Length: 149
Image (cartoon, rainbow, N blue to C red; front, side):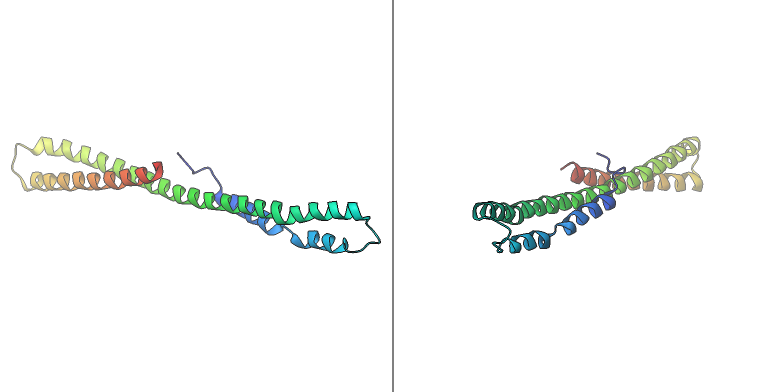
C-alpha cells in the first residue's frame, strides 16, 4: 500500500485543531447560568442542565477519544510512509546494481576465456554486486513484511 499521496502533517494539524477547539468553558458558563432561577423554570432548567452535562462529560470526552485515536493512526501511517520510502529507495538501488551486474557479466563473458587481471577483477566485482543485491533484497523484504503486518 502506498502512502505517498497522503498529507499526514495537514491531517494531523486538522485533528489537533479540532482537539484544541473543544471548548469546555462556554458549556460550563451556560451550566453556571442555570443556577439563576430568574431565567429558567425548574423542569426546563433540570433537562437543559442534564443535557449540557452529558455533552460536556460524555460527548466531548468521546470526541477527544476518537480524535486521539485518529492521531495514533496517523502516527502509524507516518511510520508506514517512511517504510515505503525506504522500500522505494532499496528498489532503486537494487535496480541500479542489477543493471551494473548485467553489464559486468556481459563484459566478463567476453573475457572469461582469457585469464587476465581485468577478468579476475570483473569476477570479483560481480560477486560483490551479487552480495550487495542479496543484502538489499533481504532488507527490502524485511521492511515489506513489517509494512504488510
